[in-house]
Image (cartoon, rainbow, N blue to C red; front, side):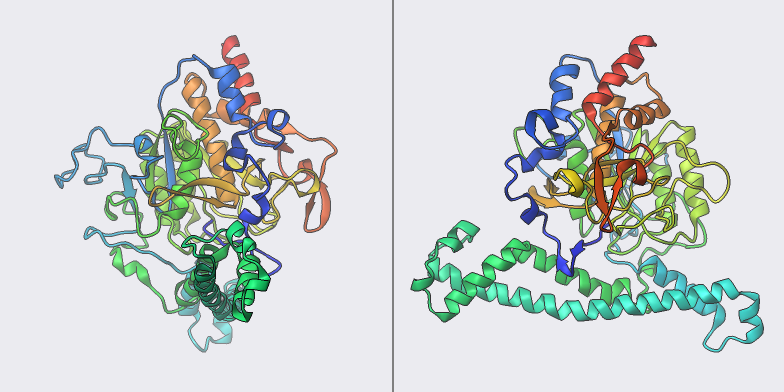
Length: 526
């Protein structure tokens, strides 16, 4: 789910949306009645229902791009394998993974080298089909494999269209970035300030600036509303990576890992370096789940007694089913109670491996929480993988799919990018302007169902912590049944008015206070 968000062709800035929200830094934990914003009432639950109640540490698996395990607001809540001796090159706990102190990296090799970017799954599937058909396939071959042939051509058409778009946007973003950097140089000189803010630039009097200064001021203010230099850098990097890696038919980075893609090879590849070359996404996700609530720094995670197990399996591009399956199994084998999966793709050629891993997790009492996706699509007709629907058999019962909620009220409540589905999405949770941890002990707002999923993962961890007698099925049931319903409230999806009941299984928004109340009632009966 490491996907940039665009609205009307403009890079989407959550900062712009949240700039007037006084409580923006913690809004997803707040309460509608107390704070005027529809968070999940985490603070209210701790204050009124959980104060002085006993709890135990819960292990949470984060399958993602990597996590900054040294972050000031995360380092105390990072899992440390108690059975492994760091740096001795021995698999002390005999779990198949050498020196796995904080988790495992399925995107690297024994030398400590890591994959940064990957192709999209559509490109990989296309290449496989192209190899099958060759440059000039005969009519007999095409007729015998008609569906595959049509899929190959459809994939190529979509890939080439997306690549052409990326090639058009890339120079635009680079030019805007260069222009903004030049404008900053001019404005710093004019203001005498080394750090520019909207207040500093707005305070510059137009009449006292020359032509270049006036143009720089206007440009800076306009682009700052779209996120400024950081957002432009991310946009330029996104399109550059699409052209060079994600949509490049000839890019093949997997040789670096040195594994056999036709076999699972659990415990036979990867390394123990879990930060990775780009830990932005995974660090942000981890902070939402379990940023330290006791250190008076940064942000407040939803769960107050967790350890984060880091499993790196998501590159810049599409994750491989093999790595996802092994990541799930690793997390389960090492004791997690809930796994966060803030990633996804539209194709899953080795889904059988993932299905087997999900079944294994279910057999061990592990709950999986998945982001619904950021394509503003109906997942009932446009599936998002991994999914709770297996190739064979009934749907997985240990699965929660999460759509993204905005802090706005009324018809703008659901994030404009969020996927939805009457059957495929369970609940909605805050996923816009979520301020959380980023590498280097920094903090940043990000948007996406990638941010909504860890809100629910944090809630699940809270319930496991305070109510350890509950099963994973009961935890899921509580989260879904306690979700706040909004009967009659319409929201806009594709510019059409719908209700939450139309676009999710529960028609509700997760709420920690209501979930804890229900858990208290259930355990009292037990």
